[in-house]
Image 1 (cartoon, one colour):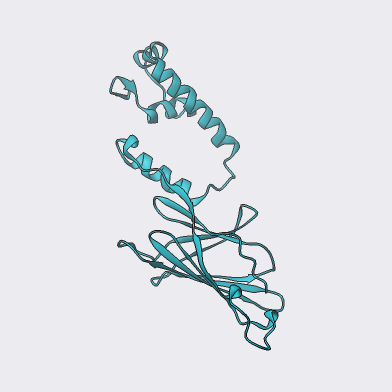
Image 2 (cartoon, rainbow, N blue to C red; image 1 turned 135 degrees about the horizontal axis):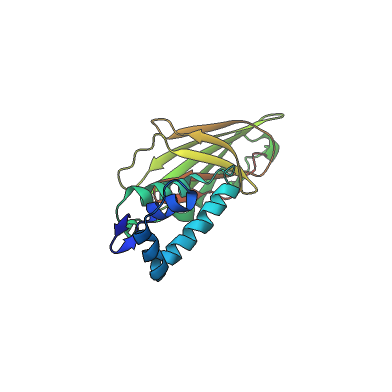
Length: 202
């Protein structure tokens, strides 16, 4: 029946809702008599309905990280759900005084530095005649974290338009960007880090 702690296990309820597996009379009787299991069944029905409607939607990477953590553990209540933070801008070369005789549009690539309590993100934004480029590097300041294979999303108006993955040095790049207002977000196992809007223009 899939009982655990006198309640029907969530995977068994999900299989029942999706029609993957049936349930014996004892299990069905338990659900009818148990308020907790009826609540779980109702939640699973809503979840299954939502999944069917949104099967073409690609969830953010931090949501997938949470889901993997929840379902791979035997005690989901012990899982730390990912939090969302905004990195702080520490340095922006465009905020520096211009050298004598230099116009802002003649400046070299824009350099910015963002930081959280655990890491720093160094960005260089280059703009050509038609297209721009964002080059970045993630550097760990506290703790021991592997900077390779981290997914970095480029978003515009909250929609992911491009993805990149860091190399062994924590470096990533986005090429051929038209002028626009872009944002970056970095998905770690327990944190989604967002950067304020940074237009690739002078």
